[in-house]
Amino acid sequence: MRERRSSAREAERAYRTREFDSFVAGAAGRLLHAATLLTAETRSHNPYAQALLTASLAHTYAVWGRLRGEDPYELTRSDLAARFARTAWRHHGGRGVLAALHPRERLVVVLRLYEGVAEEQLAALLGLPEARVRAVCARAVAALGAAARREAARPVPVRREPAA
Image 1 (cartoon, helix red, strand yellow):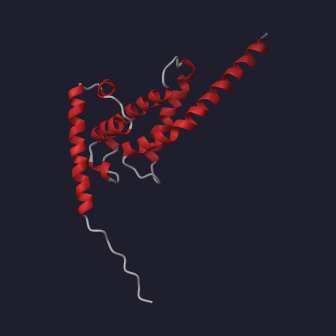
Image 2 (cartoon, one colour; image 1 turned 90 degrees about the vertical axis):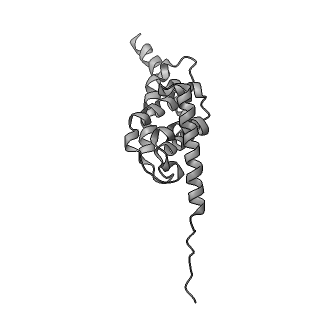
Image 3 (spheres, one colour; image 1 turned 135 degrees about the vertical axis):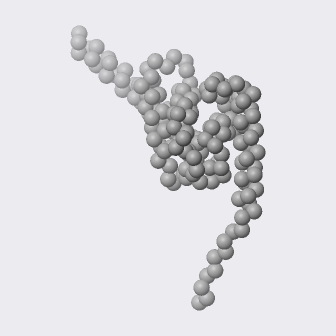
């Protein structure tokens, strides 16, 4: 009797692992890109983004068996955003246009514009009023526009090839 229960648990665990692996195969790329945008790292060098995503996926795997009709992508994205918000103090700077934004502004812009999260959901996730989320998003978009204009106005260095 014990052996049957044990093999049934093993089969359930294997099924759960295969299901989770399929989810990760489909969602990890987009989630890593979102995490990279949040941390303002480059695609080729993004250790903080990878660490955030790994921790969020570990959390999702831990609760995978208890998901009842919940969207695992939304759960993982919410956990990723919460982890970023708790560690945002270390994500000042970075590279690219998004680095010009404060981490909270980056969080709002990435979730709102890249991930398409509704203002109501974002407000609930961050514990802010909707009007505040709207204001942070508007300020961040304006700052991104100014940063993009500055970037476009910078002269491009010209490489000169040595004469042959």
